[in-house]
Image 1 (cartoon, one colour):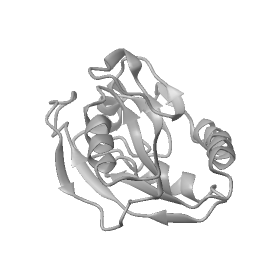
Image 2: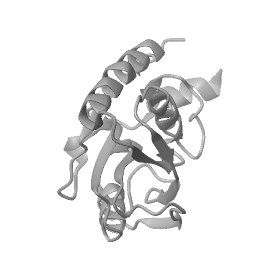
Image 3: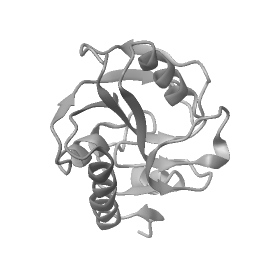
Length: 178
């Protein structure tokens, strides 16, 4: 079988190392609160957090704007909110991808209401060609073209998050057939 792998496990691990260096240099010894967005951001966040050298507190949020489709509905739902108090803390929101930007714009506005000391966004992938709102990630793993991609936390119909590489949507049909 021939797959169209966009980023191999090795590509991802190498980029995680350099991304962690960027974040470590930015925050220094300042403690941070890392907020992975579930479900897509959990694999990336877990691998990234283990590479951070400052004191790290972790809390989670669960949102959705895709449902079971291949594009964002633009309607962001907050399924689970933070338990941590973000007031006065350095907050780093971690997600798998910034596509339309709806989810991260919603999250940024939501968290900002609680007066964090700082609020930064970190995404494994950035798909700027699909942006519908004015928002950018502060730390980005890879920029990608307008392809539907899965693996390494990204899903299609809640499947394929467990792959340790990122591949194109067309390859799903091949995987299901084998």
